[in-house]
Image 1 (tube, chains in turn orange, blue):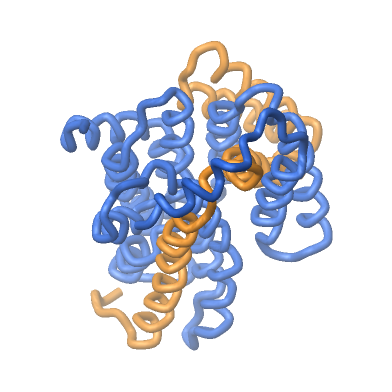
Image 2 (spheres, chains in turn blue, yellow):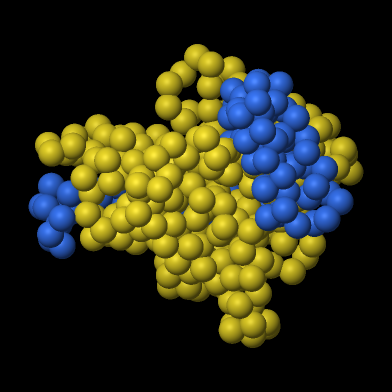
Length: 102
Length: 242
């Protein structure tokens, strides 16, 4: 494990980085040309929630019934306590117990 | 205008929970990376240059003595397509900022600090320095997590036994609850969820994130549009130059 990076690694990671950064900045710069009110705005306002929900739902469903229970517990804890860390740990605990004992 | 330093620190603080989860699944990535023979320098180079969790998982998975450079770049493009939408959703936060400010701040935007900033913005008090403070803190947590996994990989050989692989899902479920706006989100979320599940079932890779997000936003766009002043649209469009 000598601390030197191979040329092919430098290239592969640099390309991945360029693509990722272009998407990040590109989204922001394109959006400032979009209309700021009307139907388009409504869509953009709904986007964060829709994106986050799409990100998690398939992995929740993939865990089966216990995944749904874990997600419900996580949501309940964060609604009650406003503590994201506690909510995360409770959700993980449900999955941990489910995998160990079922 | 708000002060930079207090906003930066407030952003870092608000990201403590997501940073803890990033550290947890960062350690999972580190374990995988050690099995693939990455050095700590390879790992840090990737953490610093790419800084995107899901993409890094796929890159490590594709890692080999003969790097599949083209396939890897394409895979990263598909997985990170959501950043186009994430970037776009940050437009209101960045309105009125200079181009250089945008260029400097956007690199350290990850799912986590973006989501925390969005839920903070719902409460009306987010800023670009809040976002950036979260990004820097997250970068440190993510880097330590991956290095812990890489260098000390032996002690967690099966991270899934400890539900560490569920940390990501759990923390983002909590964040999704944080951006929930109430009744107006019912239709977009149902549509987004349905589209995500369908895409997840029928298409490989991470297309489901973009498909769900777009479908949800579109459903909000074509839904009932009450009390809309159409004349306003044109006027504001021109005033928005950046």
